[in-house]
Image 1 (cartoon, rainbow, N blue to C red):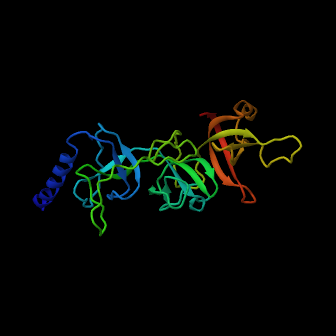
Image 2: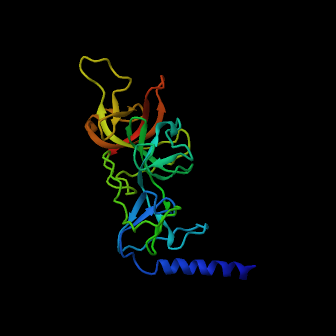
Image 3: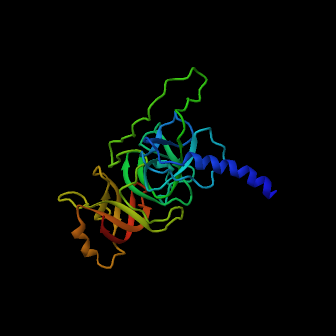
Length: 267
């Protein structure tokens, strides 16, 4: 049995070694599946050595390799795919742009570590801090897998460039850092945003005196500072980009989110 297993594994390992024998000669698109007709989720620059993914057992078409991409990544999920704890529900698609037909970066997993970095209508922008597996073609120009005459060779599409929240290209590392663990209700975690005061002259007082805004200037959560030992120090963070650590819950009426913070620092 051992001999048979080795005989099966050695050709596969040899094929991988052959595919990765030299650095990439051109910038290469990475897809969510081994299909060149799908949108790219990331790019490997020319001259880099792709990191082969561990544990991929499915057979790949000739010329394709599975690669490991390091996070964090920027992504978008629909608000309905967020649990009450603000964790992304397992199995929910994480997309590259805030629209239903945008390419899927990956599917959420229960153990994901995520940070909410913005809100846009019915979409929530997140930073996903884990490795994902993608597929790159390193052989000759692939032929699209459709029942039609072969099309002329196509160059890799340009990176997707959403015009919001500082996303510069698909699958690029996110600017914020997350240390929070996902998947556990009520677990404190990190949130980023602009720290602002909600108090305005001649207007009714808000439920909380402070809030976090996203990069578009929209409030996405109130801030409850009652757990801080020195809440008077908050004023020095007004209108600055911060990272807070705390627990997020819904307000009593269920219309808003409030983060009960335990610490605050400049981003």
